[in-house]
Amino acid sequence: MRVLIAVLLVPAAIVTWQWWDDRSTEHTLAPIASSIAGRDVAVDCQTLWGALIDPLPRHGEVRFDSGGVPENRIFLTHETCDRLSAFADASRHGELDCLRTLDWRSRVPLGPETTCYAESSPTVYALLTLAHESYHTAGVANEAVANCYATQAMGYAAAALGAPDEEARLVAGAMASLLPLQRGAYRTSDCVGGGPLDLTPETPAFPTERPIFAPRGRGGTAELVAGS
Image (cartoon, rainbow, N blue to C red; front, side, top):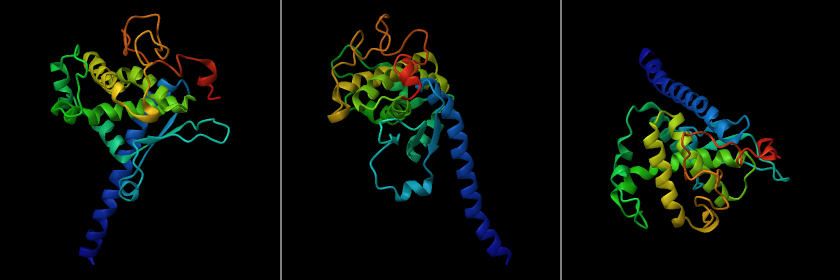
């Protein structure tokens, strides 16, 4: 009987620990998402068990109703939440070290075929996903526009999770360099400094402002902050 109880306690402990870890991550991410969106936003992290049976190729999701109004809730996959949790818990992010060695003047400084891309892109895209879905909750339905706005908020997200400012700017710059390589609905040529999608066109800094801050909603636009 004791052996049976011990056997049953192990999976129960694993489930409890996973539940606690997910809730802790959600509480860490929700204030960051809310600051980016300009409204109160909740974050739901997918469970490990949910990830095992999820057939959809996605990193995150926000639902819009039939009238085009978004929920104030973000769904993030287990992999994305785990990546963001690990980023917040780490005092050093070695996977981003190679970004300091890139030639940012080149046409494609972070090519998908490079070792640096393989090392850094999981973290880059996890931070992008958090900011991207936050803009969806602010009412930005267009994927390319949300991607551009998210790139400009990534520095804030990284800094809010504990990254030093230099590293936060690097990770946002890495995504900005990858934007021209995006395809389909995620592609736009307007995501440049001073362009139509620059949230702060009055400043020369792009994609991350100095000092770093959270650009709310769509540059603080009241109707998007209200979620209408």
